[in-house]
Image (cartoon, rainbow, N blue to C red; front, side, top):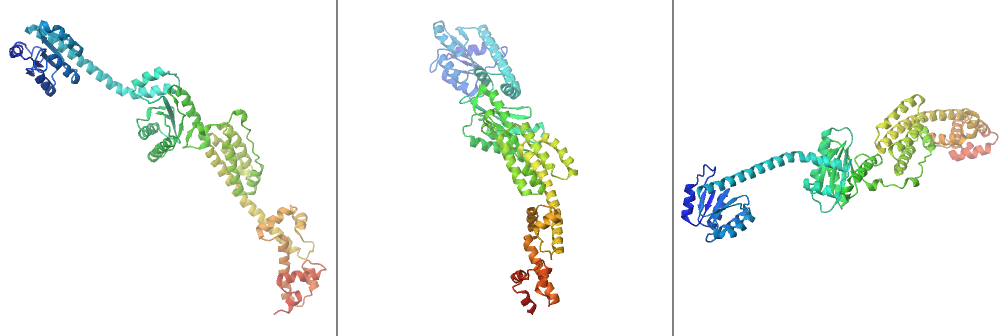
Length: 515
């Protein structure tokens, strides 16, 4: 306590007559005027000041005004004479409740002190109570914020006034009322702790100035953020969140971003983000999906999805993996552009898969068909494409090796027929196809050239000439007409000679005479 009066006798009288200990107070000092008192107050900050009003330099009212500006908690008891009572009333506006008329005795001062102390103790009690309340509130406030956000987007409609009240309670300020929602979905197997991890990472990366509220809702993490006009910069931050989360936890996350709207439309924005997550089926896990990505034409204008699978199946059967791979990429691209819902898309893929596996080995078809149950576990079109492509490749490669073996057997048979009928003038591709192998001549011709590198007719001519050379070298005096007859030229030795010269550079006669 500080006692202030310019009359020494009053200061000494009050100092000596009042039982300060009985009043649970300590007289910390005295001052002769307002200026000295202000200096003492600034250095010691007492709880109570008993001060005369009329003093030189700075009177009591001026002292009250100065102290109230900087130390509003300091209580004042003012002393004055009758003539100054009206003047003293102005002190009431600075919280001064106690005013004693001079001369005042020990009892009146003690009574005033008791009242002031009781008021100060009540204020301290209230302050302590409020501090405890604030401490407890700080513990539950994060949970209250999370619960409020859940209710905001799911089962309760809040008006503008409700939001203003909650915004004040949660100390949330916005330059405008446009906000956005971010919905994170962790991909693969994850623990509940991973949701809190990505929420904390997102809050750190985006910053407190951007994130207004956050919560976990179901298996998702939801953030309410201030509107970001620069979408590209937001995407940079979202990719940083995903990268940081993936680095620490080896998990990927898909992010859905709502369009900016007023806070009262939070439920609509939440439905938008859920719809965006559904389209990860087409865009793939780990994508950042906005409303622009899921925009589609009206249902009435969407054409029915149609795909002729017969050419694809024919190439699977023949083992032409290059064609099959390219065609599957084209098929899934068409399916992605159709933007059908997940179940409808699967209903188109499954029949195609069944048609593909039917081109495989009969004894393995059932095993491939059992894999259809795997479709329930696929949540993106990309994973379905990988599944179908991998199985189609296995079937194609098996068919390719089977066709090679089959083709090799056919070609071996054709060569055997050529060698056995080399003297037959009617030996031709059509004759072999129709009379010996009973197969399509065009197909045999292409197959023969693919396997041997020569056309069937060229192969026959070359082999006849090689055999004729061997015959000449072996016998020496063989006749040209005999050679023609023996190697399929019948009774046309002249034509035989022309073909022989074209093949060897010599006529048969010259060749016999050559060294």
